[in-house]
Length: 110
Image (cartoon, rainbow, N blue to C red; front, side):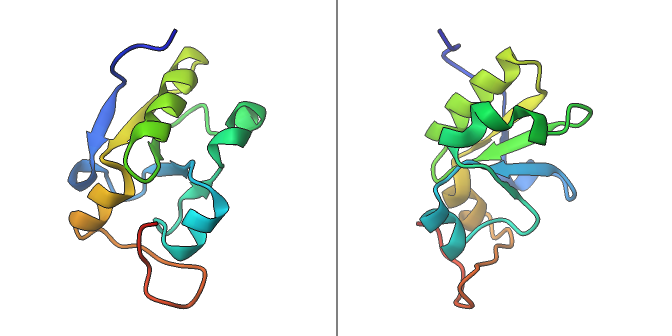
C-alpha cells in the first residue's frame, strides 16, 4: 500500500539541472516536455529502475501529478530519492517554465 502523500516539489522550486523523469505516454511526450527530462512511461518504470540515478534526487512528472505520484511512492519504497512535481506538466507550463516538442510545433501539454 502506498502512502497517501508523497514528497513533492512545486514547479517554480525545481532547480535548474534537476534530474527529471517524465512518466507520460509517448503521444504526450512528443507534443511537449521538459528539455533534458528522461522519458520512462509509467508502465515501463518497474523494469527500468537501473536507468535512474541512485546518487541524485529525481523529480517525477506526468500531466497533472497523479501518475507521477504513484511512481514516486514506488520509487521511494525502492530506495530512490524521488519527488513528485506538484500539478505536473500543467503546473510547469502555468509557471512559465520552458518546454520543447519533438514535432517542430510549439510545445503544449496533452
